[in-house]
Amino acid sequence: SGLGWDGSSNFNFTKEMMNRYMGNPPNKVFQEPDLKAESIPKFDKGSFLVFLLKLPFHVGRNFWMLFWNIFMACKCFGGNGLGFRFIVMNFTEAESKLLYKGAKVQGVSPFAAVTYATVKACEDVLGQRPRGLVQQASLQTRHYPFENQKSDYRDLVGDWLVGVIQTVPVKYGHAEAMTGYKDLMTELDTVGPATREAIMAKAYGLVNSGAAVFEALPTYSTWNCPWDRSIFMNNYGVRTMPKGSPFHWWNWNAPFWCGVNTINVDGRTTTMIGSLFWGLQVVEKLRDHVERTLREEFMAKAP
Image 1: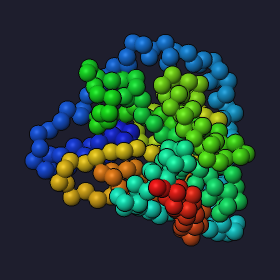
Image 2: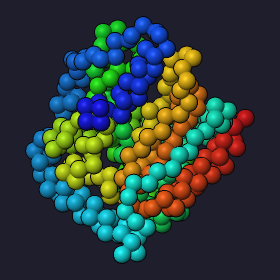
Image 3: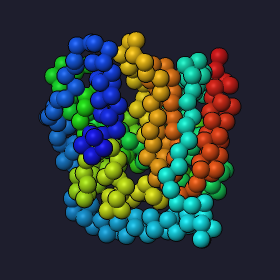
Image 4: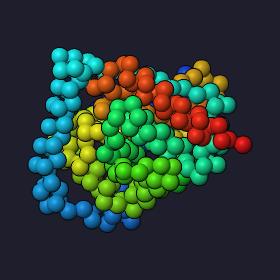
C-alpha cells in the first residue's frame, strides 16, 4: 500500500508473501507497537509554534522550486522533457562485497559511499551542488519496538517512516559523507532537531502516511523539499529473503529532483536512480558517474 505503509514495509510485505509462497509458517508482521515510554519526552521537545512560523516560508519556497523545475524541464524552455525516468545499477554478490570492503578501507559506510558518489555526480553531471539529502529512515526498531523484539528484526509492516535532512556542505568528501551518516544515526537515536522537523512535517501535512507520497506535496514543511536541489536518499540496508526463494532484485525509486533508492538483499546490492526533471540520457549519465565513483574510489580499494 503506497499510502498506508512506508517503503520498507512494502518490501517486508513482499518478503512475507514470498515466505508463505515457499510453504513456511506465517510470521506476525502486522503489529502496532506503542511508542516506548522513554522516547515520549524526546518526541515532545519540538516546538509547534516554531513549526507554524516556518510553515509559510517553507511552503512558499517548495511551490516555487517545484514550478521552477517543471518549467526548466519542459522542452519548449530548453529542458530534456518532463517525466519519470529511471535507470538501474545492480551489483552481483561479489561486487557488493567489494563495495563493502572498499568502503571499510576508506573509513566510510556503504551508505556514506553512495551519498558521496551521488553528490559528486550531481556536481559533475548537472553542474549543481545539492542543498540537502532527504534520508529516509524508519523509527520502528528504535522507538516503537514490540515486546522482546530483537535489535536486528526489521520485518514489520506498518508506517514508521521519516525523512531526516542532511545539509550538504560546500566540501563533501569521504569524511563529510561519513559525518553525515553518523549524524543521522545520532538524530534517529535521540530524536534530534532534524528528526523532529521531519516528524512534524509528516504529522501536520495534508498527507501524513505512506511510502514518501507525503513528502512529494509542496505543503510538506521542511527547509529542503525533494523538489529543491535535493537528493532523495532511500537506503533499506541489509535485508534477506526466505531461503530457496526465487528472488533476485528489488528495484524501486522516488524520482524527484534526484532519487536514489538502494538495498542489499541476500548479499546483492540493487540500486535505482531517477528524476522527474532531467530526462533519461542525463539520468543515465548520473548512474554511470555514480557507478564509476563507487568502482574507482571504493571497490578498487578492497583488499
